Every structure is written in C-alpha cells, then in structure tokens.
Length: 460
Ligand SMILES: Cc1ncc(COP(=O)(O)O)c(C=O)c1O
Image (tube, rainbow, N blue to C red; front, side, top):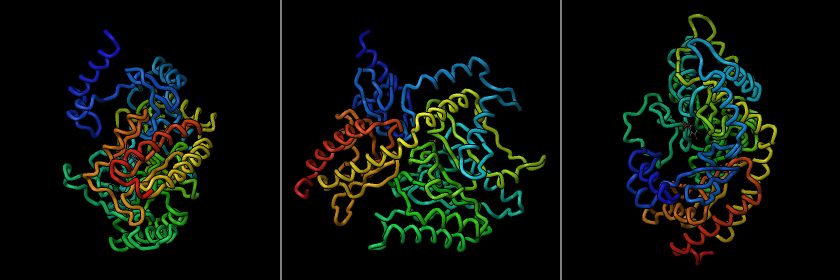
C-alpha cells in the first residue's frame, strides 16, 4: 500500500468514526482533513504525507518541552514495566515524588497535591475543595464562584459555566450550573471607558470583584477563579495592580483565590508559574498541560497548607475519587518532563524568545492595518485583528476571517488554528529565534492575503 493510500484510509476512518474536538466531520472530509501526525521533534511535526509543520499552537499550548523527547517515553515505559497501577488505598514511588516536587516548585505554602487527568478535572476539584473548605469551617452558605468574562476553565458540566467569552456557545448544555457569578476581564484594549489606562482598567476590574462580593453577600462567596494571564480573549496580561489587589480583596472577605495555571504554568509566561510575576500566592492552584507537556494525561489541584488543614482528620477528609488520579506512569513521565524544563532552562528561553516573538509581531503592525493589538508575555502571545484600527471595529461574520486565516496558515506550513480575529500562539518553550522568524514570515504572508481579499491593503 502506498503512503498516500494509507493516509487516505486513515483520514476516512477518522471522518467516519472519530468525534474530534470542535470540528464538523463533513467539512473535514470535504477539505481533505484531518492531518495525520506521524512524528515530531522540537517545535515540528511531520504528517503522513511527509510534510513538516511548525506547531505554533504547541498542541493546545501544552507541549512545553517540544515533541520527540524519548527520555519521557523511556520513563513511562520503565514505570509501566515496574508497576502499571496501584491497588486501592496505596500509592507509588513516582506519584509521591511528583507531589513533593510540585510542592517544592509552586509558590508559598501550596503543597497538598490532588492529581487528576486534565485541566477541567483540576478545576472541578478546586471548586469542590473550596466549597467543602468553607463547610468544614462552619461557613456553609459560601458556594458561589466568581469567574471573569474572557477566561476558560474547562469543558465538563460544572466548570463549563465559569468564565466564557461573548462567543462561548453554552446554550446546548443548559441549564447553567448554579452559583456562577461573572466579573469583567481586565483587558484595556477593549475597555468601554474611553482613554482608560491599563492601570486604571486593572484597578476598576479588581474593584468590580469587591463590589460583586458585597452585592452578593460575602458569606455566599466560596472563591474567585482566574487565569493569571487569560487566554480566550488573547493573552490578557493585567496591569501589575490587579492580582495583588485581588489577593487582598479575597483575604478581606474570607474568599479563596484559585489560580488556574493550566496554560500559564510550567514556564509558559517566562516564570515557572505566572502568579510569580506578581508575587501572589493563591489558596489553590490548578495545573495541567505543561506538567507533562501532553505526553500523557495529567493535571492537579494544589492547595496551601492552610486550606488543606481543613481536611485533616478522620471525619474531615475530602470525598473525591477519580480512578486515574495519581497514575504512576503519568507521574514518572511528568517528573522527567519537569527535569527537562529545569535542566534546559526552558523557562528562561520562554521569557527571552517570547519577548523576541512579541517584538516581531509589534514590528509587523506597521505593515498590516488589520493588526489592532499585540499582547502577551513569554511564549503566550496574541494578535487581535480588526477591520479598522482607529475605531477597533471587528470583522463581520461574512468576512470569514477565521476560515480564511486557517486556510492561509495551512498553505504556509504552520499549525495555527484560530476561531476568530484573536490569534493566540503558544509554541513549545524550546523554540528558537530563527523558528520564530519562520512563523513571522508565514503570518506576514497570511495577513497580506487576508487584507488583500478584504480590500484593506489601501489603508497600509
Ligand atoms: C486555562 C484552562 N483551564 C482549564 C482547561 C481545561 O483543560 P482540559 O482541556 O485538560 O480539561 C484549559 C484547556 O485549554 C485551559 O486553557
């Protein structure tokens, strides 16, 4: 069988049997998709036809150490050969060692680790911990969770109702989960207040959370959850006032602060954890993705000693079981992944190459009237495209911006999918400046094409 026929057959199997994320199988079949990835190294993957692609999305902002790290595969293999799972009520060496390692590298007294399989489970766990914590302390009325518009915290039936963007389509899954309360996103570019500075926006949005707590009644609020640098609206880095203010507000009203570092963690923003940019220690931190660079499923919710103390004691333990929680094979792979992040100084690389990436994107703005804003930190960068830079007017659905861009990126050998005019980029942290140059070149050509097709070129 030729390579082409085999690839064709695999594509047919996928479009016939596989239920892929957020895609329509009919459209995929018509467009000759999906691409079948067969190997990967660093920031590149090779498909079944032998073409090489740069993965600008880094999986789902998740392949932090890059593809092809055989040491991680070896660690998983060795552990699976040694002991593949654990009898009920026991644990294993890599699971205990990983918990200790996570306690060492996370800030402050974050140290009690509940391992799970993915970011959604980690946030479900965090919310259960927050609610149960208040009950343990005799504060049974606290069940509401404040989240911010423009954040994403997962897809399972509870956390689906946290955050969200104006484009989030949750109607299929109603009724909404009770107790969800929403606060504004600290995104100055889209502030409704004319001329508001980044700092004013941060202070207003943090104060809005205090107002919500007072309005709802502090004794009804269990926690505030947020991504330190929120992704869905495009790498929203709040001004420096925001997180310390929010920490202070939570402390004053006895509300727990949950930092969702599912994307941010493990070096993505140029610090091991994004909250370190502001020296803020949350009460619970959720981590996933970079914890294992997506080599296997793994995530965790980590609580501070103070929060965990409420669960010590025979009557008080957390009632929460997931079969794959603490899986030793994932734990062994994760330990090796963290060792690579540390020994190859990938956090520093993310800070340095990320700054270069952002600079190049900003440089492109001069040539491209469609670039409204460039934002981000480390290797979490984003561009917001607009129809008119002066008025910040967004594109109309009939402009088909996302479809045009996705087709254009594909033509130019980069894996970069966007759902709208905000293009988020989160490549592996091992990326080099010359690989960034390749991405910039592909983006440059794609934007010329888009602007030409939409008749925007004359504004340049
Ligand atoms: C910030 C954040 N939290 C939670 C999740 C959910 O993680 P998962 O897809 O592993 O369930 C994601 C996924 O992209 C995320 O970006």
